[in-house]
Length: 234
Image (tube, rainbow, N blue to C red; front, side):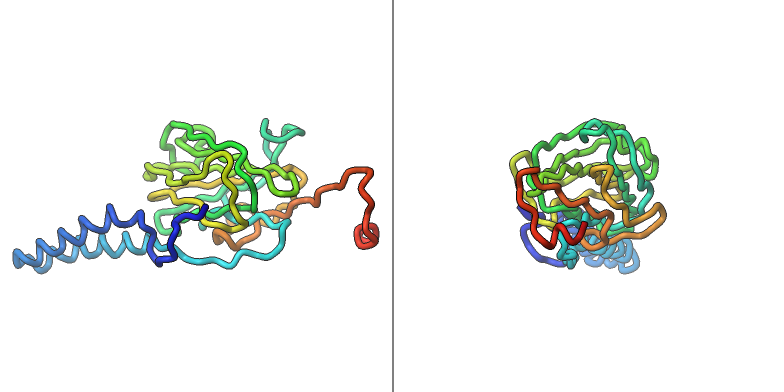
């Protein structure tokens, strides 16, 4: 699964907004209203810029959890969570402004074990309550090593549509494009509390590239022989 399924520089989600602006500019030009063409042309330029669809270089290390979105880290720390066995999770929340790239990336390579859409409010995505009260799509992930993670895509004050086709049973590659949120929003990643945090509140991050945290290595079963390298690392 990859969203969008093409490598165009602009996401296909731009077309419903771009086409009317271009038509309006052509009509204004045809009516001789040359100065009025600037308004729809500026709108068209913003749409193209907002829906830009960049390619990113994801770090080649399996323990790295990468940012699911461009933006500013607004929360980073351990919070209560029923999705994890010990009742706690490391949460990193990223705010996407109207000027951020709004494509979303998979934070880890994983299988989607559950995907739910929750209707809700449209609070400012900077508000910490928005992650639980706003309209959102929540995906529970499991890495090949058995580590659990949760990805939340949250609508904001202006954002009114979350575009993410991921459903239970799908698999995603590390750093793969998984969706897009239109016009200002928030993305959150929840991880085991033992994960090693690599960012702090206020930092700017790049989706698919910036490492948010490092997962603790999975412990092999007691009857699994350990390699000399594993023993030496301990």
